Length: 94
Image 1: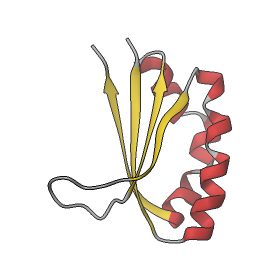
Image 2: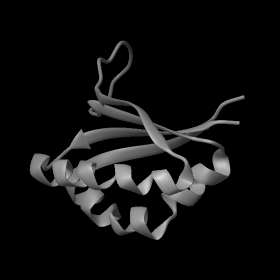
Image 3: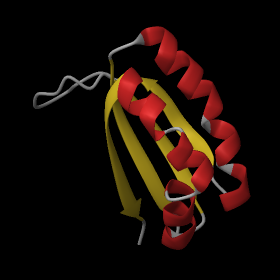
Image 4: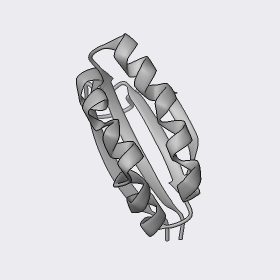
């Protein structure tokens, strides 16, 4: 069943975040992942400071978890934390 990693973002350092944002997509291919949506969001209900969202689709839960825990993605975690406040969620379809 397809799995989706949902990343909500509140940018703290725009330049650092832009650099990080360009480094992340190449890490997905080895795990069958592809960004299917990303950009600024429009809040329809509730409260949040997160104003950007990315949705990455993977073939299954195991692929998504393997990607997230991979050395390449984890190596970017300090830059991500310095650049933005983020939440990362996994949703399995089905």
